[in-house]
Image (cartoon, rainbow, N blue to C red; front, side):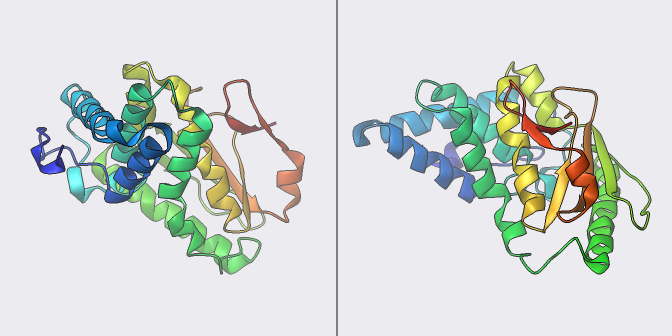
Amino acid sequence: MEDEKLIFDHTCHVLYSKACKEQIQDKIALHYPAEQWEAIWTQVQKQYVDFLKDWRTDLGGKKNFHNGTGGTYDCIALMAYYVICKSVTNLDEIEEMEGNLFLPAFRKLKFVNVNKLFFKRLLHFSFATAGKKCLKWNDYKMNVAAYQKGKPIYYEFTECPVAEFAKQFDLLEVMPALCNPDYTAMELLHAKLVRITTCSNGSKCDYMICGDEDEYCRQHPEYKDVQGYRRNK
């Protein structure tokens, strides 16, 4: 089905990104015979639209930077794919797809090294700026701690629309695949993420970020829990 034929409220919702569409169609082609590709893709599209019918309408549409590639609506599209293609997909594949959407922006920042004070302060500034944008859209509740020299950067989300969506539609099992790429994103900046909980398996999503040479990250080794979340002790 052509994207233009999908019926949903464009004043408050956005279509999945072109990159997300390509990711899903590539996986459909991997798992199904060619004669089924269009039918399966149409089912995913219809599931996406069905999700939006019962989803909140206050996330800012195209104006909200969280709704771009790899963001809130792409996560909804990946969950639509998961629902329709659950018999052939798995969480490792969903995590790969989200990483392919979310991580290219970080790969462009390969010159960044958070072990260096300049880049660490710059990273904190970017988080503080994002926090102000979250206040504007009232979507992700983001609290950013003041910068402290010699200590890790800290911020937290106490509300996350993607986690809310997963709870509403009984898809919490997918959340590890959507949360874990945060770790890889920081590794691309020569940084380490130390996280205990997320909004989907706790009351907040906590981000403690330091350089990958910092002793702090060695004091909090990473592990993967039974649900598939990357976490720290």
